[in-house]
Amino acid sequence: MKVKISYTMDSDQVPGLINQILAKCKQKLLEHSDIECDIYQVPKFAERVNEAIRDMEIISEQLIDCVNIAIGISDLKQKVKSQEEELIRPEAPDVDMEEEGEPD
Image 1 (spheres, one colour):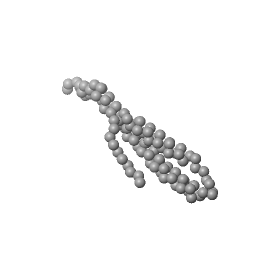
Image 2 (image 1 turned 30 degrees about the vertical axis):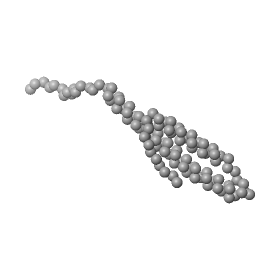
Image 3 (image 1 turned 180 degrees about the vertical axis):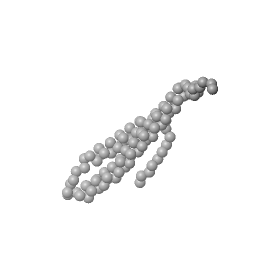
Image 4 (image 1 turned 90 degrees about the vertical axis):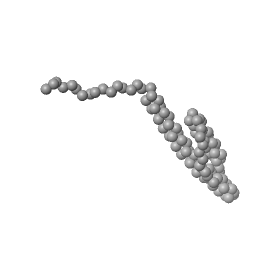
């Protein structure tokens, strides 16, 4: 059974979390890289293929999660950077852009 979870962590830890998820995905793929067909043990072969399919479905969802997490943290970092730049940037004085005309 698959479940989605969420928990709070420091934003600087998020890239490490993404890399941990990616490493687990790679490891799972490697576990299934040695599947070979044995026509004398088709049920065992079919079982291994079905396990691989189930794991690949989860891997697919986890890779999509990684992309979504990366997009979210990137957006957050950009927002924080923009806010910091606004705080640093001095406010421009209000300037009256109307030209003074000659008196009638």
